[in-house]
Image 1 (cartoon, rainbow, N blue to C red):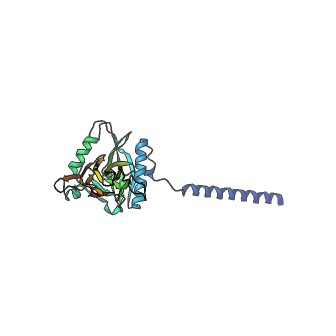
Image 2 (cartoon, rainbow, N blue to C red):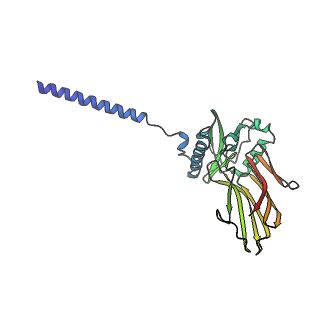
Image 3 (cartoon, rainbow, N blue to C red):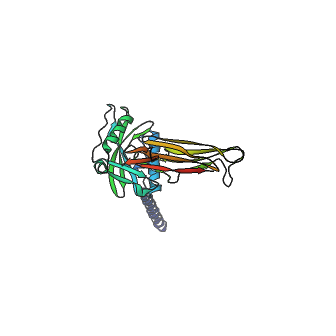
Length: 301
């Protein structure tokens, strides 16, 4: 009798423990954090998935989640084979600014931004016509800007993203740029009949982090054997994918103890523009796109 009672108690305890373990296991599965929908990108080409993951990561790091890519959907559009690209509507959202400086970022409708000057819709449609092909596909992206959600149509192919109002409008650029000199840090230029140079440039990056463009200038000074300046030369450059740049430079001083040049550099995304005033030797930028200018002089050494 005692044996049967012991067995009954043992089996009851065993079943209770088993049920408790199963319940805990199910609870653990239910409460596991689920991966965000926008972070999987399973249906997209590898290159596009890589770019969107970069967009997510950079926005999180640079803007501390003030601006976010929430999700994507290919169901609404699918493959486009007829070459049809819809005209930009006045209620579509456009973004511009530098994510390295989140306070410069602006989100607004085409109608709102057009009131600030320039035909935003025409600028966007002109670039879309140049970039989007009949074999490209389209998906819908959902964004959040400081608590407000909106959607954009993103065109893409196997090589990557072709166009999106937010991705092509926002950029990343360091305010101070980069500087490189022929003389190593702490050393002075060799004036015994040699030459020395200094180079300054700014990298313009895509929202996903890779390089989109560059503007810069370089001054090269050659010396006589007595250490005086024999010649001063200058170089300038600028390029940008899906945007425009302007670069100019000229020699101001070509003798004595140093050389000097003047430089004028500018860049803008598709809804902005760049112009050069030769009389004032200055680059100006206008419009509502992401844009910037560097105008000044450089003396060396």
